[in-house]
Length: 194
Image 1 (cartoon, rainbow, N blue to C red):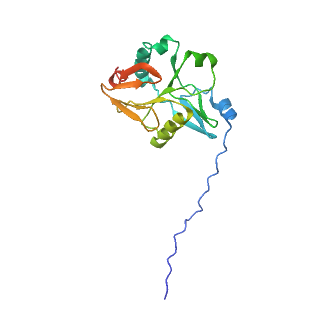
Image 2: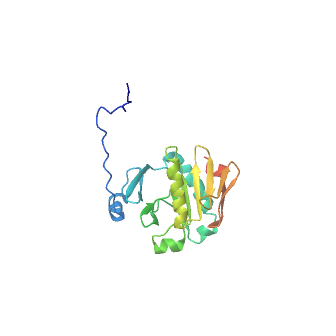
Image 3: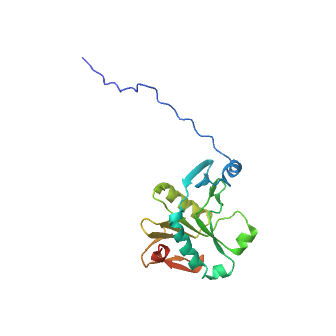
């Protein structure tokens, strides 16, 4: 007598999820560019990526500390600014809004769609590690030269000068923005001081 092992069958058919309709960049900008609802929206190959704004009121001291140090630089004296959430095209199909990015006076004046050479992302506990890494590589492919990923819960700053070259700053370790802003340096502990 031969027996066969039958695979269990689901009691109800498995629903197939419908693929989401991809948006064009123009549709994304029309629907999401001016939206003010405490979320940050980015465009990634036709898909809207929604995240809670990582700069919450409890973290405003980080921005204050960075700005107080930045105003002491030659970049600031030359008209440069650290500006929050500026739209940046990292490719023809990807639009990002770093938490803070550096803009020279010339780039501000010409207001062209380019990528900042220096940006800062404040990483929240709910951020997806894989997506954070993908975005980092995307920034560097687009021409970014320095990226800081600030992790408030660890009180650490990951300073990237390429997708794989990183210095981890904690305590008195100085976080540099060179070569983009050679005189913009701040100790990690000073970023987190209240």
